[in-house]
Length: 336
Image (cartoon, rainbow, N blue to C red; front, side, top):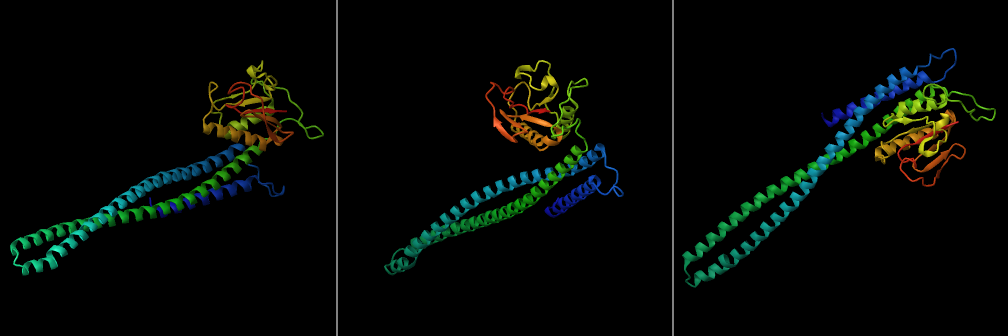
């Protein structure tokens, strides 16, 4: 596939993403009662989201293929630079040798030879010396021409690699920007899906959420159940989600025995999560903060820090002595 066709394809993908998002946004926007179409269901929006994600994944694949190609071209460019430097050194060395031989020929075969002939020196020996010198000069000249060809070939290779590097960097920059825009569109669609779920429970006159009792076989409140559902849909359960614990476990309970807390695990067996999983934990925590007021989230604990809805800021916690106890391997979310 040529760079031009890839560019046309990427622009087509982005236009399709934009058109799809505009269509979905129009579907879920609130218009006048007389003209409003029925709101799409979560199932319908998830279908639209799946199409957006598929197109976005195509862009991401092209982006990483472009990065691999760029790395290969940069390697070629580096090799070409080294080859050109060596070819130039060989060329300069051969040129220096020819200059020395030419000077020697001039000294012994030019004026020196004429004076020797006048002095009745052996002309055969002198001609033999001149012939040998000329042969050496011819050989060096041929070598010099060969070095010139090699040097010029390496120079063309380096120029070509540099040009391709510039093209690839520009293409990757454009594709990266398109990928970012596509990801933002996807996030906005996910937000629309979140908003389709009303938060269970009631608020007090002052706007605070009224606490709920746990229910169902999972022994958690309907409000906690919704938070768990939305996080699982958006970020994946990956290593599991733990909510109700009768005794509270090693962390002393808190809202777990009340059915108002869940742990979203990022690793197994108390191991420190990978960088990618830690980032996923950061994203879960950021999402919970963003939706705290709407979903009745009371506080979040992650990486030995606690965020409370009343303060709206992270505070460092005391060391509890372990990866799990300090919440490095999972964000903990509690609701009212």
